[in-house]
Length: 391
Image 1 (cartoon, one colour):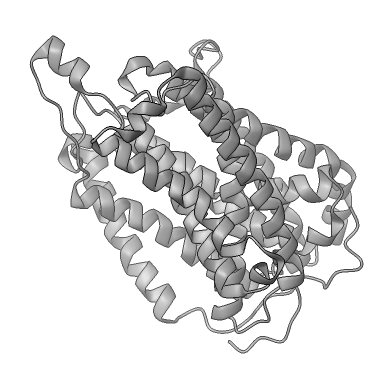
Image 2: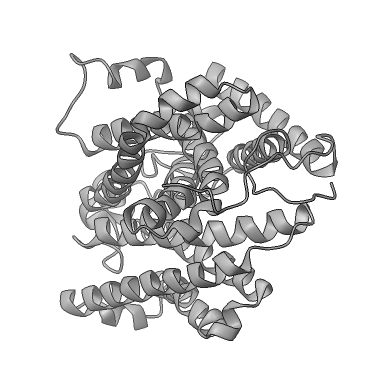
């Protein structure tokens, strides 16, 4: 696990006050004001949630999609420590930082979305816990993974404050922390897909399948690699650093291999269940299915060859397209392909849901918080490989 052949991480430096951080700060303040209203007056005061749609974008975007975006650390760590691809080691720490914020904020989003949020402690209380619940497994795994990631990232703080003894002691058990950091995301990402299975016939047949835990896990890995491509391109441009093409080019090839495996599994499942015909019906669900599928096919056209993968712009666009595809998969299953007709038949209420402006602003605020935290930590703590910066 040595990284002695790689450039040592170092703070980028530069001012913390700039257009990006100020904009992020304003959006975070708006989010805080909305959440203050939410906690005092309840979910109904700021959301369009109803009995037909108990989950809105705070769960689907902030938790389901946000945690998948945060799988960059897990995906890269799996390459480095499980498959012994040490050449990718310089990507571990920045990917882990993005994962750290993504998962921590996903955990916060769950509490925000709880109707009786003050009872959240029951989830961890042995006499209140329900070990037979899929949601319990997801909650415990995500909580443990957040703790594990903070421990994995702790050497960054130890280096900053010259806590060499603490770093030395932690390094003795780091193999165990890394093993847990690889196992836990596999468990809860597949369990997030199991939540979909539990919803039964309320999910459109194009997305409702016993294979969905595997599809969630594969797309989480793919989105993790896509986020690494995206984050590396953005960080290189923002900090005027040279882009690590010698790492991103082979990484993109690995990502394409996982995308191919996902597409084979996805299409084989539709054929095996005999529902592929629904993809050709004149419906919104069919349109969204093809948009989602196109996002997973497009990277083969963008970066299918070695020469294409050496183009930073193509890697950047391919990363965005993959992130969009994984997001659509989750949006389609949990919201767009969610069948509310069952509720309408039993209660006579035709449920509809579209996020309110306040819901959208909270989600934007959550992502802004992640951006602000990333900027502050990369500028002041050793995360990115050493290089002359022009901040």
